[in-house]
Image (cartoon, rainbow, N blue to C red; front, side):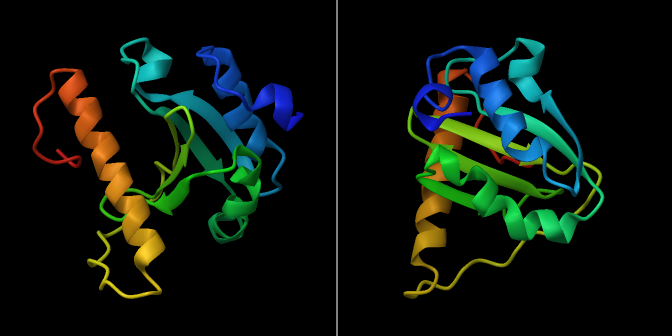
Length: 150
C-alpha cells in the first residue's frame, strides 16, 4: 500500500479495515486479524474507534514489532492500554481516528500509575489524549461516563 493513497481517512469503512488489517497480516507471528467492535456490528457513532481482534503465535515478537508495523500511519500517539483486562494496542492518528488492536485471548493486570518525569511525559500525554477521546465518545453517544472497564 502506498501511504499517499491508502492511509488517508475518507470515512470509508473498507479503507480503515483494509489498512489496519494489512499492517499486521503479513507479520510471521500473526495468525489472524479480524474487524471487531461497534463498527463491525454497525452500532458505532462518528467518533467510535476501529477495533481489530488479533491472534498471535508469538505475542512477545509482535509486541516488539508493533510500533514499526503501524509507523506508516504516522501515529500522533500509541500505547498499550494500561487499565484493560486484556492487552490493547492503541494507535491515535489524525482524523481524529483511533485504531485498537485487541488481544482477547490474553489477560493483564492494570498497570500502576506513571510517575511524572521526563521519561514518562510522552506516555502520560498519549494516555491523557486517549482519556479525552474516551470521554468525548461517551458524551457524544449519550453513554454513561463511569469507567472504561465497566
